[in-house]
Picture 1: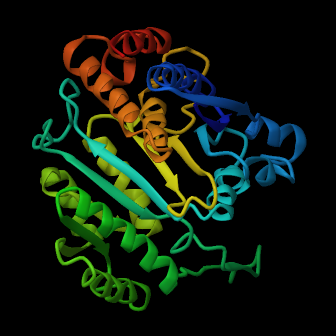
Picture 2 (picture 1 turned 180 degrees about the horizontal axis):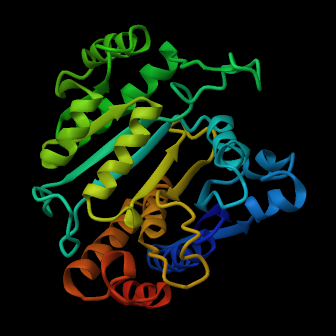
Length: 351
């Protein structure tokens, strides 16, 4: 029997409340499909930062290196600046393990009402592929003349041929397996160096995928089309910043950011990939037992698919769809009254 070594990082806020439901679902699928899961949990969080001065220990990356995958709950909490928590945990993991593809599926489920009129089940079903380790979120830059009238901050965007082409190839390959359509997010009419370079590489890589029809859209127009015509997309590929913004917008269009999953992939599998819900730590509801576990559970399904168990992953997404379409069980973010535990129990019953 195949056994997978999984690192669990509950993190902050509701992260510790949504990972146990995901683990329960994973164990059900492991028994059904004949694979094992061995978990190691790490208490790396803002609480640890306030106690020890670091989000994770100096050897944290080494502790994760031999794992098959990482399942993360949430990062961030009041009292610790976001750039400290993110750059102390999430971003070092992404970069050290070459998780250069951030994958965010967007789907409107039957039974979840979208705030957007045209966003209907079986119409909105696309994927945002975000470049995950360079671009606008580089470490190049600095601050000068602090405290003076001419104080300044410089942040450099870094786009490399290797970094852009590998994420474009992943997106085109995904489009080949899906609906055969790809949209590239750009802003080359205003950003004079990096975005024309991005556009040139999109055209160059597209020649290798003749079965994929593609177009490019300026980010402002594309954001509007996400709202006005969300059913017109299949695979959307974007730089780090643009992909970050677009994927959260798309999750809201789908009805709730609370159900949105994400995968941070090292496609070559030289390092572990990391899976996480998009919703964040939600400190306003932490500890109340009302968090929606679907984002973490759907992320766990993406993890199973990455680990070579697509049938098990499909069981999870089918159960999610059945719960939302066929029952009235909803957590509060979806307009219901179910607790995290009650919601999880119903999902496992359907599994």
